[in-house]
Length: 608
Ligand code: PTT
Ligand code: SF4
Image 1 (cartoon, rainbow, N blue to C red):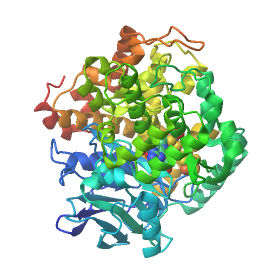
Image 2 (image 1 turned 120 degrees about the vertical axis):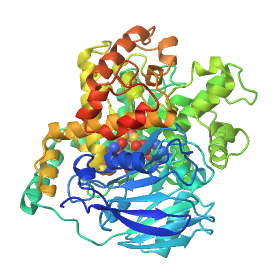
Image 3 (image 1 turned 60 degrees about the vertical axis):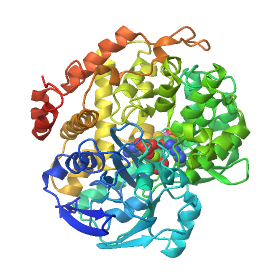
Image 4 (image 1 turned 90 degrees about the horizontal axis):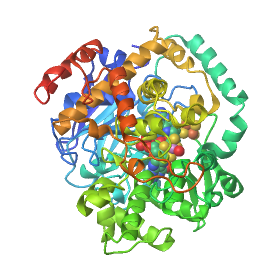
């Protein structure tokens, strides 16, 4: 096969054994790689209902057929497991040299099961695997531990590791790489922590094969040039994702005060324009010619790499109005290995609970000193930090009914940085994202703003399904960065053409969409299997956007309409081939060649 090695590395930490497993070629042609492959492997390998922190939960680190080949922005790697935050399927991706090296080990993925008795790390060099001691790394922050690992091995390795938050099983701990890349929002870092696995260090030297080298070279050269010549390139290079702060404020979707408002009068204090003035460096992922990691010096004079989501969630959402201060909390989150989106949500939720008098220990909006202290306390699960480390859904449940009304999450995963009081399509995107409320599967809000802001239409629902298939299906599985397409308009057709050149098999965008659809239904089946039931309420956007209208900005007085949201959800289910409960229909599963999930689901729920 070209594009895939056809085998994965299976590592059992408990017994310190490894085996090479050859997969049936259909695992690649039907699921591509990255997310698709991970979802299939977790379905196959995880015991039903496994506790995410049990040694029997599997962690999958996967590349795809295009990842880390010399083509635009290909340096991503997927990390996936059963999530300790949502108890459903969870994943994320990182732009990291770990993608480059894993791709060159001769394995398409590393699957980790079991748990070390004492802290350890994995060293994988091509097909050689070492189980190494990590007692001297345990307890160190992710930056310091990575420096030690670089000294131990050489700089030319790929390193994925966790900080203290992962070690202490913070439910939204992530996996970190290269001092500022983070992936696995639904607590995939905590799964590593539960296995006492501090790091995975990979080094690969095999050359992945490409079927049609000449066509591949021609396409990649053309694609790189198109990116450089695009209209938006110059602005993107200056601001990257940080340009979205001003856009969100203008369009009334900048999360403010725990998603109470969509505008903030101090937005300029955290804007991309200000970031440009403070910028000292720019970083990027492997093979990217539109590097977007903008680095400033934070409040303590150290480097902090900023992105829109981090700054909105740790800025406007908790009323912290100074980019250097936001940068400091962002850097702490990276060092500790905690997700900035869930952290900003959890702090914002607690601030609102405090304002309403629902908690004893007070926390004021924008209290920088307390925010810093609590960020550390979350990672070490100290005092109030241990409560906040549980995430919004669990905190709300323990505080009672009133708190559940302002808890901004879907299926337990905290919402990314777009307020949806006036964005029904985006609200549905959060509602139906396959890992809980993440924008990565369908950033439909930009389309919504340009077309029909207030409509609950079939057009938007169709667009949402298309975006999910492409972003959540294709990009997450290929596994490459989607930003060349989203931000500088690289034609989507490049991807099937590149895939054809690499694999030697003929691919069209429509065929890749079918794979996207298959992955969505498989992940839905996985959620149903793990939860043991399903109901459409699981796909509802947060209650807060239906209940409390905006009070500021051009859309003051607006909120989501519950009945119309439900009508859109019905359209969504119809397009996916799912019934009115959100359960895939038997014939839809057959059509997607997912027959193998039918007998499992039938034991849990009646299939229509
Ligand atoms: C992603 C999520 C995002 S998405 C952001 S900023 W964004 C936050 N980044 C965090 C961070 O940083 N540190 C931290 N401690 N927590 C963080 N949580 C948040 O995590 C990221 C870029 C970005 S920046 C985006 S939009 C795009 N996302 C892609 C995606 O999802 N898929 C894909 N195929 N390509 C993408 N390209 C872009 O990648 P999660 P990264 Mg991250 C520091 O992974 O779990 O999906 O959460 O991957 O290498 O840092 O690149 O305005
Ligand atoms: Fe990484 Fe940004 Fe390049 Fe995407 S555009 S590969 S996130 S540097």
